[in-house]
Image (tube, rainbow, N blue to C red; front, side):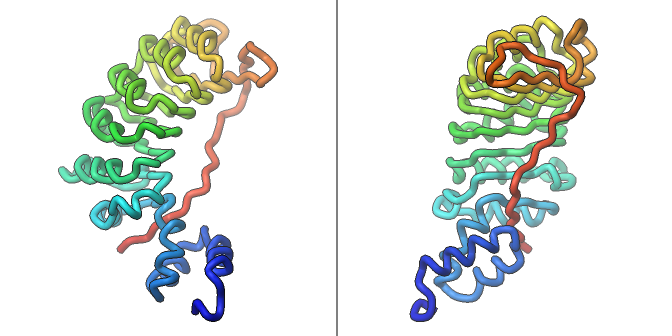
Amino acid sequence: MDKLLPYETLTEIISYLKNDQATLVQLNQSCKKLYELTIPSLYKSPQFTRFTSFESFANSLSQENGTFVRRIDLHMVPHRWDSSKFTSLLTSITEKTLDLEMLNLDLCSQLTNKTLKKITKPLHDLRILSLDQCTMIGDEAIETLVVQCPYLQELYLGSTHITDKALQLLATKFILLTHVFMPGCEYISEQGVSVLTTKCKTLVYIDIKDCYNVVGHYNGCLSRSSTSSRFNIIPIVYSRHTNIFAVYIS
């Protein structure tokens, strides 16, 4: 194959297959050269729908191929907290994926502040963290993230137990924070929201829908443009659009 197509040409061809994981897996298993070329695309953003696939991925991950992983999304793995292995497997993954940019732990109802501290300890450069409906997460988790993940840009905290204390930390300690999503957070108030929108100069969007202790003119979603220092109420819900490349492991 090397005699027919140069390395650069094969790399270009594979780049067009980045969303076709089934084909990438077949190429990966065909020869040594294609194995090496397809690894970055296969490991960039694994997505799991079964715990067994997640476990296989964790056990196969090495320090070498872990450098390719940028996104981990676990919100589609059913009954993950039913397994006593989950925390240890996830910790072993984050220890090998030091360049991870996005971690989605939505709906991990048994995730505690202490467990999150252990999981995120190696993730100093994490940019996006999603903890929606992780109902055991509170202010202690935000205190941990200040130290371990100081460069967060997007934070999803819907239905968590954070208070105004957490909003104070968000406002003053995260120098790159642009988006904060807190729908259904019943323990924050308009005082905390005011601190966040006033002191966090990088912030451009917050979602505080259904935060029933937030009264006054704050209601729903707020955004501001790069040319304005004031937040405006907007009648739409922000939606995330991410390019997810899946790794299928049987």
